[in-house]
Amino acid sequence: MDAVMADPRPRLILASASPRRRDLLSGAGLDPDAIEPTHIDESEIPGELPGPLALRLAQEKASAHPGCEHGYILAADTVVGVGRRILPKTETREEAKACLDLISGRSHRVFTGVALKSPDGTLSSRLVETRVKFKVLSREDRETYLASMEWKGKAGGYAIQGRAGVFVVNLIGSFTGVVGLPLYETINLLSGAGFPVLARQNESAAS
Image 1: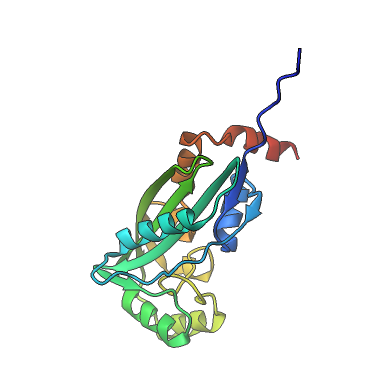
Image 2: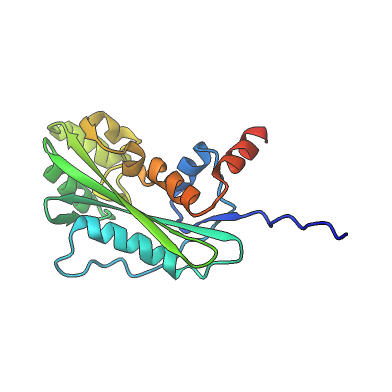
């Protein structure tokens, strides 16, 4: 009798170049098999709100990946909002300063959309909202943070896992979501889609 062939090992492909998302996955015992960012137009639609924007971009990034046999494509996008206003992923010092000025001493919301494309092409997704309140930032706080360059390319002009963590007075929601990948929701998406989360975590622990 022919031996029964074992199912090929499922692959986890992170469709993001973000080292923070990769590190979060690795810390949870789920090292990606490949990092394959997808590139889409991330422009907001006129009138689009921060939450729907984060979810749409995550879904489009996962969908844009060509996929592969036995491959699970994981994508995410993070958007910071103050009311209906969408804050940029800051690329200049002026943009970062404007964001810090706006969120100093007040609450803002961080939305992270997570999307997973299964090997059969099925798309599943979640949107995670976290409320963050900053202390009133002094001029020295702002200048020191701007000099650190941690704001470069960050939604809302800051990285909570870095120096900006000392500005946080209160956080309601997902800390890992603010970093860039809400782990609870991500693990549930993977498990629900049939990815062998526990087996991979055990494999990681044994290595």
